[in-house]
Image (cartoon, rainbow, N blue to C red; front, side, top):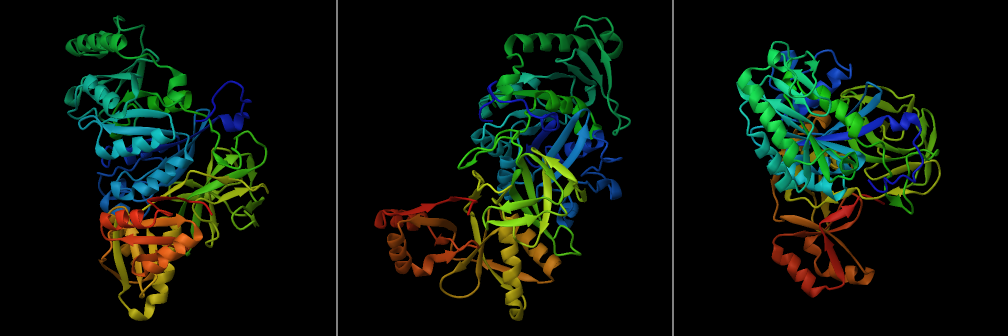
Amino acid sequence: MLDTASNRPELPPEIARRRTFAIISHPDAGKTTLTEKFLLYGGAIQMAGQVRAKGEARRTRSDFMQMEKDRGISVSASAMSFDYNSFRFNLVDTPGHSDFSEDTYRTLTAVDAAVMVIDGAKGVESQTQKLFEVCRLRDLPILTFCNKMDRESRDVFEIIDEIQENLAIDVTPASWPIGQGRDFVGCYDILRDRLELMDRADRNKVAESIEIKGLDDPALAEHVPAQLLEQLREEVEMARELLPKLDPQAVLEGHMTPIWFGSAINSFGVKELMDGIGTYGPEPQIQSALPRQISPEETKVSGFVFKVQANMDPKHRDRVAFVRMASGHFKRGMKLTHVRSKKPMAITNPVLFLASDRELAEEAWAGDIIGIPNHGQLRIGDTLTEGEALRVSGIPSFAPELLQGVRAGDPMKAKHLEKALMQFAEEGAAKVFKPAIGSGFVVGVVGALQFEVLASRIELEYGLPVRFDASQFTSARWVSGDRQAVDKFVNANKQHIAHDHDGDIVYLTRLQWDIDRIERDYPDVRLTATKEMMV
């Protein structure tokens, strides 16, 4: 969201119709269900899967790992492209579970906007707040969807107040709910002066909408019970007095969020939200890079890797790099320069994702997300260009909060374990550290559930049962500074030193006291908790 001033040239129509966004929320606010409905309206799937349903209806399209299907949670971010009206939506679904927040942070570097889903009964929850702060750092425009209005939920003004207070952003209602819980009949669309009615009988049916002439239109009484109508008129009048009007520029700058109300599981309010993303969401934006920024309208192609997923297809040991196109018009078979290794790469079989289904991408434009199958050449943070040495910046890697040692169940398979761990490290699923003294590896993650995911994936994908044991270390810091100072520091603290999968020096700590001691005794050495994913 850098310079949105009017001096920028107009984008080519193909790029201008792209809307690339992520959905963020606390676990269980209904994010995956909303994603499914988006696909349903985009004509991408015939029947939306629900996380709570039974049997085949429960298989959601965006959760493709075995563990996601078993637990009904999203573990890894997935990307989907589909058309809606005149727009091309590139939607990235992120894990809501806090144990996978790093994957989510990185995903937010690849989108131009975020849709924040909140639960009508719970309001703003801890994980929503964390993710919102990341959006804040990047000034991402945010559109809000308040879900589950068909269950008992809180007062609408209370929800809006909470968003304004906790997230320090102006909120403007785009629709207003009529009743709540059992009495919820639908919404009044403030932006287009329409009445949207919910059909509880058929969950996959688009809500019917009735055009009305303002809130005094007698036609309203035919559809809305008298006491709810009175309440609606009162509340909308108050909202218009107390809350700011929708300012599209403030939305693009990330200072204001429009809020829609609905019930994703009943397919209600979703279409209005999608129209809102098309109308108020940003076109593909300028990407920050070194030595210069990349504008989407440039004719030369460039893109960057924000995620690597190994073994998406368990039958083939494939690795797919998710690439956000930053500029130009990419065509299949093009040769692009892999900036880190300075080698050309012919991209012959790029894929477009429809959740776990993929099709060959014949072309892609700035704003699109494509997958490039490769055998480990591409890593998170890599930039691909038509020859110019540009490196997209701002993709973070975070210090893990939990560390454990790892051993193969069969000692003869230690080599296989190393290969598996390196793959997961490059994918960004975990940090893998090789201590300078002794054998074995220390694995670091952000949340405890990731150890389970790793163990189950290593066993499923490599046929290797593994054991994680407690480690004496509790956290890790990257080491940087003057070469001589770092060498002196490393030699004196050998038992704490390890290297990560990029070969960078890492200091493993037991207590905060260790970090304080280093800062005191070695003023020329810097210990950092984040590292930029760039080589």
